[in-house]
Image 1: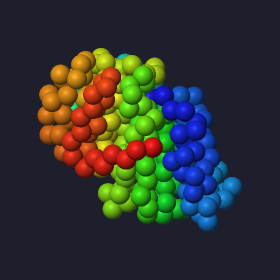
Image 2: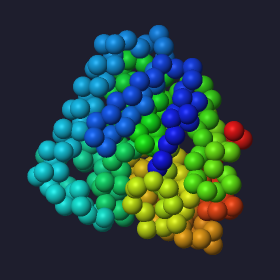
Image 3: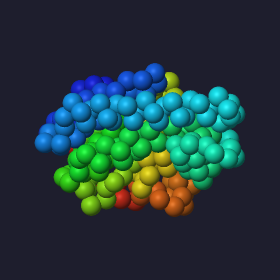
Image 4: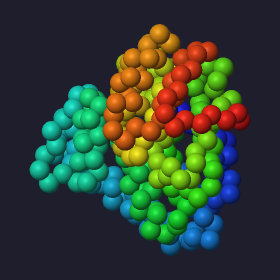
Length: 244
């Protein structure tokens, strides 16, 4: 999903943030100011390189893992990130790469959590957060009139949480649907990312909202759903919407 940098800063204005960019991975990592140091930043950066290296080596051994758009059987000895990507994408019927952005956000976020009790990791619009205060996550939905006008209000008691978005009208990510935004809140950012893709694939017009929600709400671990197409919106679950 497309993310403008102004939005990035608004989400975490009270935290200390830094970016890590490695090939397709584009992270904004935010920690409590008292917990940040150049040493912590370097450790998190090196861990991100380690994650990507593990994943890239596995994809060299199992190229179908990267290519397939369908559930995939993981090879024995696969790294944890590949295993989790396959696990959660298989749950919703899509290929493992549908979980890559959310998965990297979660694993980096969990690692960063060793250094700070307040952690938000955003990876190209897919978010993992563990927070002690109410946060608002703005929604970008292309040309929809809801775009940049509404936000998800996140209660800290519901975190750690993954919040991921798929769009058939914005950005380079593959979607077989036409939703301006299909947003999933889930216990796992791996799951949120994969389920956002699978749910977005089901939405061509607002008439598809009910069937898409019926699909996603049955997935164990999904906590909230927000769908936007043009001037229509549908929500389910633990979704609290606030104006921006």
